[in-house]
Image (cartoon, rainbow, N blue to C red; front, side, top):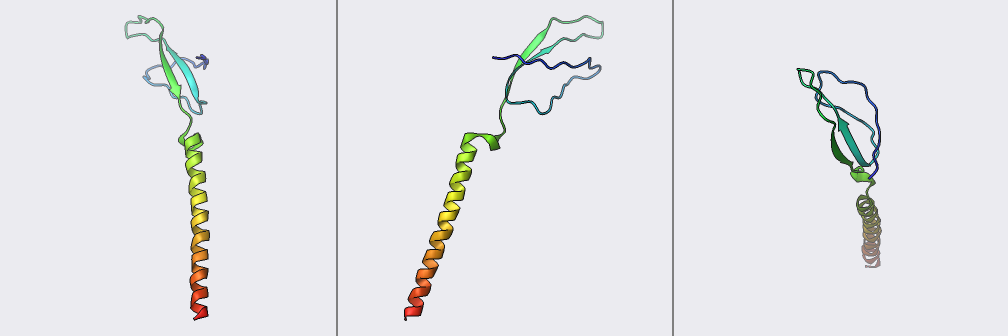
Length: 92
């Protein structure tokens, strides 16, 4: 597991942090905060896993390529069937 460091300043009066455009991977989120009396807690950490988007996964690409191949083959077979039917009509 790799620990990646993202430095931010102090966030006052907020109970959330937003990070955009993080690369897929595993992160450790360290938080240190205080209560209204000014008592600081020990360093807390959470392990966060960012997954890659579904459209860049191998299974989506496989499904997309399969769908394109299926569509092309279906169109070609439909056209061939149509031409055969047309030829039979003309021979009569």
